[in-house]
Image (cartoon, rainbow, N blue to C red; front, side, top):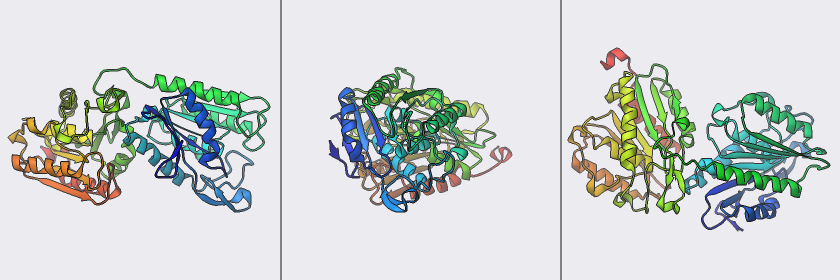
Length: 456
């Protein structure tokens, strides 16, 4: 058991293939559940457990006393009578923790979010109102907060849910748990497992922890997809699909899915209603650098060596991407109105696809990435006029900043005429708000709003 840089309690094997982020209840800390999670870990040796502690805040229910809390509670007299002030900030913090696990190589489909009491409420609030599709949700002695204004995200319908509740709970009444289950079922959640524990009050019991372990064992096994296709079409995210005049394809990084970028591009899509945004998800494949585990990947990575790697399988991904581009062209979108881009491994695929073809497109955007197979890279002169956007953090610990600079110089020397390069001081292998603004501004220049007649 250790503490990470963000003061989260961590119980982890040396090479985890799945993760559980577990949130404590009101007035507690991550330490309060560390022994229980360490016990669960014995039956789940491949799972990393992350236990954050809520910030302290005044809690109205407890006469304004400051204590660790995920949000303020004014009353527990009825399930739909509280605004849960502060829960949005807690959701954002938890999602940031989840994204760190994704960046570390654990796919969203292998990450479970759960909690006890108030922590369970945050888990339900976060897990079923976001396009970030997780591997599962656990709610122990919890309830659905902001019950009356709950907005279910249809993308999460297949996310399994385990609910556990004591029938004698005097704090979060058993009826609240049942009402929350019924609300989620009506909304569209397909896989809900509900356990009731006679005589149990507002706490946990060994039978409950055994049920949690069994459920996690099932989910961590079933969430590994054995499909060998390049793109998982069922997990593709699309915005602005009606009557677009331009299309942007964006490919996620290693171990992620389209849903990891869905919120980002939803905001961009709102500002650019003429552009169709297509975010495909890579199918799982064995990845050498991940000890052969199957995770969403556009190609295999043997080591983090930038453009010197072999990138086995990248041709199949290129062909699949070109096929998707061809479908958009057939639907009436001119190639000069199609942009391909991606983050990290997705950016490498964008380079590989966009500048080695005799059929140029409207633009290439690459975030935190590099040219793959740099020595064998065969630049197509026909693409010299294709605009290129490169964005990179100068503190990137995964895809090093100098790799981006080298890729830029390589393409400039090859003949690319229009390169925009943005550097973000102190940014690691991730994204930031300024970068998203720069992407939107660049897209507005490359595929401006226009009418079909003007395109002709």
